[in-house]
Length: 127
Image (cartoon, rainbow, N blue to C red; front, side, top):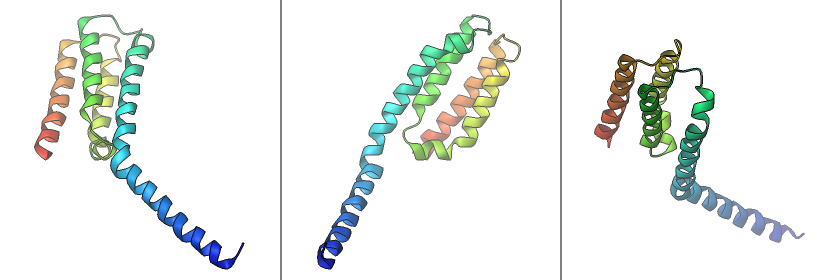
């Protein structure tokens, strides 16, 4: 390969790769993120009964499932999740602590709902 041809390949290859990365990060990441949310919500639906079979069936258990699905759907992009990661960890800890005694009470649902509403309101204020 001639030296001139090699330089053209490197130059144009860099421009093409840079353009592709820019387009993916700024325009197509939402497409993949939305599909990822659909997959996560689908997994919540499929695995909920199996993973939480030790928790007593009740309306509170169903309310918690719906609350977790709504929490997942609340986020619009990956940056949003990264900014709210501490609140996500708090919600996850509270959800897991509500499962410790295998009974979900109204008080636990109220606590989780309040935490969810707090995150949702802060998100709405930031937009």
